[in-house]
Amino acid sequence: AAGVIQSPRHLIKEKRETATLKCYPIPRHDTVYWYQQGPGQDPQFLISFYEKMQSDKGSIPDRFSAQQFSDYHSELNMSSLELGDSALYFCASSPRRGGFTEAFFGQGTRLTVV
Amino acid sequence: GESVGLHLPTLSVQEGDNSIINCAYSNSASDYFIWYKQESGKGPQFIIDIRSNMDKRQGQRVTVLLNKTVKHLSLQIAATQPGDSAVYFCAEKDNFGNEKLTFGTGTRLTIIP
Image 1: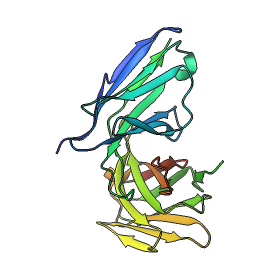
Image 2: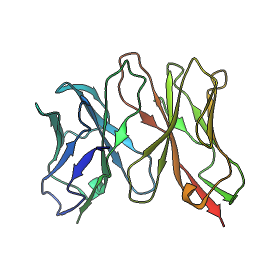
Image 3: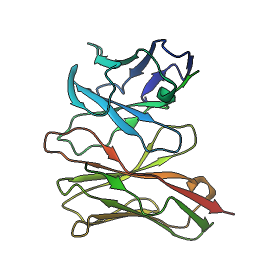
């Protein structure tokens, strides 16, 4: 079965650079979530989209932005990168069926800022 | 703010024994709960879920118990296997207009051969 695809899997950037993470949800899933997970930490919700509109916002820094495109894929844009941005970034998708449905996670993008 | 947390950060269990992982949540509006398993370097993987109108749900070798009175959730894994070694997270969702899942602190389960 098709899963959530994230690219790239690994990314190394220098401080103050920009990064773009991509997420391709499971086909027919119209809701996408972004999470950030630091070493030994639980996943922290950043932002979500439903039908290309932002549906919820969490602890996403102002330096980050995201959007969902017409084909439902999503991109997380990160600017002025800081060392503390080093983390695993997960994308998840779900079909919107009244809310009682789990989110399916991708394998994540490991971002290292040096 | 509202949070979901786990009582124990680590748990070691002998292979073949049963394990119980606990979770406390504080958002009384939460009406949907999920247990995820996360192996090293991988994304969280769905194990089992439960709605707030239930107090027990069983899957293959796993059982989730929900006690809304004390806002407590547990995951029972029967006859543990080496492949069960991972970090387990509980997550909750408040379906009154919210879509996000809020994760609690994970518990690292280690199965001892």
